[in-house]
Length: 349
Image (cartoon, rainbow, N blue to C red; front, side, top):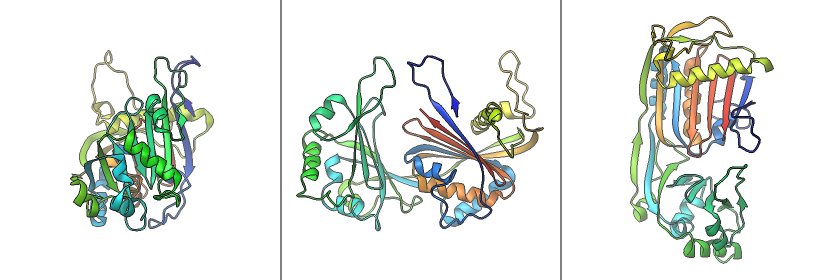
C-alpha cells in the first residue's frame, strides 16, 4: 500500500492499494470470477465516467473486431429529469426496481460529491449523500461521512436503503417514512443519467421510462488514439515489498501513455530544463511499440468495464494490456495484465 501525501496526521491522505497476482490459466468469459482480483475491482466501482484501455497496436484491430462482433464497443445511456418520489412510485418502481430479472438499471443524479446533494442507485440500492440540515429534516436513519480532520468542511451524511427489500412496499411503516421524506424534503427535480445493467451496450430508456420521462439517449463510441514508437518498460513477473516504488513508476508510465504524452515516445526531445522524465528500466530494458488507446466517457457501469476487460484479455494473448477507470466520487483503478501476471492499483481518496 502506498501512502500519498505529507506527514501531518491531521490531514487525510489518499491511498493507493497495490496488488500483484497470477491469473488463472482458464477464465470463463461467460461467468468470470467475481471475488478474485482484478475482476472484483471492476465490479466494486459502480459509477465511472471515464474508461481507458491501452494496448499494443498489433492487438487493436482484433480487439475492435471482437467488440463489434459482441456489440459491446458502443455504450448507451440516457439522461432524464425526475424526482426521488418518482423512483419509488407507480410502474417505474415495479418495472425497474422490484423486477431485477426483467430490468435492472443504475442511476446517478447531478451534483458534486462532497458539495451538493447527490443520489446514486445501483442494483436496487439507493444512496443519498446530503448535508446536515437536510438529514435532520428527513427523519431517516443514516451515518455521518468522516471528515478525517478536514477543516472548514460542513458535515455530510449518507442515507442508504435497499429498495428491493420485501419490506419496501406501500403500507409498511419504514417505506411510508421514505415516501414522506421524498415528498416533503427531497422533493426537487434532478437531472439523472441512467444505464441498463442487463445490457450496457443497450439503454434503459424504453418502456415506462420512455412513456413517462422522455429520456434523451446518448451513444458513446470509443475514441481511438495512437502513440507512435513508444518506449514500453519491461513488466515484472514478481513484485516484492521493496519493489513498490518501482511499480509506482510503471503506474506513472501507464498514466502518461493513456494521456498520449510525447514523453513516452522514443524520439521525444523535450528540453531537460522543462522535463527530466525517463521511462522506467527497473525491471529490464525498454522496447519500442506502437500503442493504441481506446477511451469511453459517460456513465460506465461495472458490466461494461468487465466486458471490455475480458475482450482485451481474449485478444491480447501473450501481449500486455492496461485498463483504468475513474469514478465520479474520485476513486480510480488501473489494471495491468502481462500474460498471466496482473498488477492492480486502487486509488482510495
